[in-house]
Structure formats: structure tokens, C-alpha cells
Amino acid sequence: MPAKNGQTQHWDPARYIRNAGFVAKLGEPLIELLVPKAGERVLDLGCGDGALTEKLVECGLDVVAVDASTDQIAAAKARGLDARVVNGQELAFQSEFDAVFTNAALHWMLDPDAVLDGVARALKPGGRFVGEMGGGDNVKTIKDALVAALDRRNFDGESANPWYFPQPQEYLDKLQSHGFKVSYIELIPRPTPLPGDLSAWLETFGENFIRLLPDAEQPAYIAEVVEALRPQLCDADGNWTADYVRLRFKAELR
Image (cartoon, rainbow, N blue to C red; front, side, top):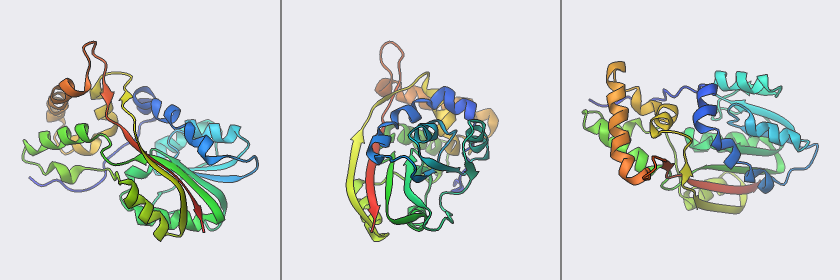
């Protein structure tokens, strides 16, 4: 049975903090790469619940935070942030920002050219674009297990893949084709310890795969994927580590 290639990911802020609070913490080095200057106007693209946006505000920046999830934006607004529901592939800002900052969001946007068009429009001439996303073989072990378990159920598992994980050269070429001069780009392997069982990670990030199945079949599917990955990603003490690979970059609009 072929899968419908469509996003079904739902972002629950409480679940996200519980199972993926490490995302904002591990994104903090990006702020150093941004080299923030007090008073600058910055767009936080794919802000989530605003945990990292708060760090930008603490640097004295005037930050507009955007995300496609209404629930995450509600959580960001509860922090007192200027947070707006905006699809990152449909940015409508015009020459408004000194910098665009993004962490762990671009790989959920499957039209990178539309994203980069919008980022270029949003920046002032010479503005900076600083970000980190999944790249290369990010969570490949996990993704392959999710796909294989769907294939065994006569679904086209690969068509459910909701992620865009480019190689450095691919993304470098895209940045340059949209008018950016790239001063830094690097693929960073970062095996990441998870705060709990892998099933919680799958439920948080793997909805596009899981929701292809009837509700009654989902627990068995998740359990099958967990057991398939246990030999590779779980140590003798029951601690799980996800095979994260990050693509980090800094570019300036020409």
C-alpha cells in the first residue's frame, strides 16, 4: 500500500520539552557563530517553544520568532516573546532583519529553495544567515528502521520520510544560488544521548511514519523499531544514543 507523502507531524510543547529539551541546549553554540550585537533585529526561523529565542533576547537582540506550529508559538508567546505563526517556506518579510537564525528546523522544510528565497528577502543587504540542521546521514539508522518496518507492512516507507538532510556541498550550492556568500559550513557528527527510551523519541519526531498505521497497530510498530535498533543504539545499561549529524553554516547576503 503506497503511503501518501504528506506532513502529519504535530508539535506538543510539553512532549517536546520532555523528550527533546536537549535540542535548544545543543543549539546554544550557534549564538556564538551569530556574533550578536545588541539592538540588531533578528528573525528566529522555526523557533519551536522559544527556549533558544530567549537566549537571543538576553543578548539584547530585537527578535521576531516564527514557527508553523500554533502550539509551539503559544508556548513561545507564554515566554513573553514576539512569536508568530508563519510557514518557513512562505516568509513574507522584506529587507527587515540584520540576521536570520535557525536551529533544528530547516530539515522539516522540504522546499529549501522556497525557504532560501524568503530568507534572502527578509535580510537587509549584507545580513547574516546562521543555522544548524540535520545533514548528511542524520538519524539514518533510525530512519532506515522506520522505513523497513513500514515496508514489511506493505507501505512505501521511504515516501513517509518528512526530512531533508543535505550534504554540505549541496547546501553550499543552494546558498550561493540564492545570493549568499558562505563563510563557514561543516558537517558535524554528534551522537546524542536521549533522555529516555527510544520510543519517546519516535513518538516525538516520527509521527509521519507512525500515523500511516491504524491506531491499534502503532504500538507494535514502535516496539518493533525499538527492538531492531537496540543492538546499535542502546548500551548495556539501557541508555539510548541517537545517530545525529548536524550541518552548521554561516552566510552573508551579497
